[in-house]
Image (cartoon, rainbow, N blue to C red; front, side):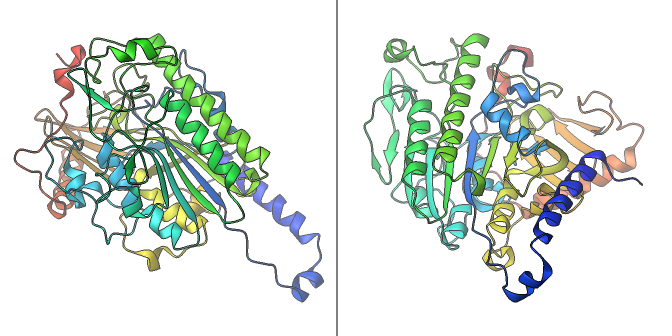
Length: 468
């Protein structure tokens, strides 16, 4: 079997880099051991409810995202990136812990809301993506959406972050900075560290500006900056909608929004990503900084998910397939397109390894270290990944190219290499494969926590007309 074109290009780029190093001469290399490499800074950017095709790089018909696209142009874009769950706080649990969300009580709230048990959160003794990097000497900061419990019991500072500025709950008005219900502000809303915070401005800009200040104020200590935009999550508000926000009765905003407003919100986020990238260049930190961009789940009401079907709240590809782009100058070849399967929970072991850490010594994780695959040092590895969702009795497992889906009481089998649109039903022709994958899912599910009998799970059929 020949080496794929992308693989040949990456190996050639790495070989050229090694040749340049060799020009220094073997004598000098033996006389003075090379100093250990600098620990790279890490900027992890996550959008909220962004569909797979909501970037110009992934096929949007109208939205232009030159800053986000540049990460793939200057690094790698994964075509088979996944959210670990099809909805918000469970995926954030998987990202934080490097494990399947369903191992934790907070991970089976779909999503976390007012009906959840009190004092819920990831166990405080659990290593997190922030704590393992802090143990490596990183300064850790979260800017943006948290949605994993309330401070001071279960805020970001209790789970490995040194600083926090963002919204505590699962949504917030872009100007009022709180979730709005019945015309009234609810919850903690915008907070700094463990306390509520009053600031003015459009949240997307506020978070982008805070990220710029953080980068400009960073000294020589490496930093891990989690920039979790709440954009383009509802309510459907752009920069010019401050007056309308004052009279909004409900943040779910079922009566509002349109494609033009959604485009405005995504492009505002991209403009803030541009500010962050410019700050890295201006401060001389760009060459030693890993920058990641992804989404917490598939798209919602106004998203594009083509060529996939399904949306947030579904285990179909459109509900779980997300963009993943990563830039790391000198380590990831520019313009790389990778078909490596990667999920949210893989970022902890992958980034820890890139930071020079020891994954085995940091804890036990379901996620896999894919640093060698992303940097072109190893070929893609096959994966087996599992999903479930209580609403509409959903289950899914992907093993290699095969995917088993259960949704709405019906079972399906697809070969994603031949049909990523999940229309060519293979269950009748391949009953043994369907049974094999179903048994795999049953075994995995038996090791996860069961759902609460009265636990919440968001049902897309209640809001989407195309779900009847």
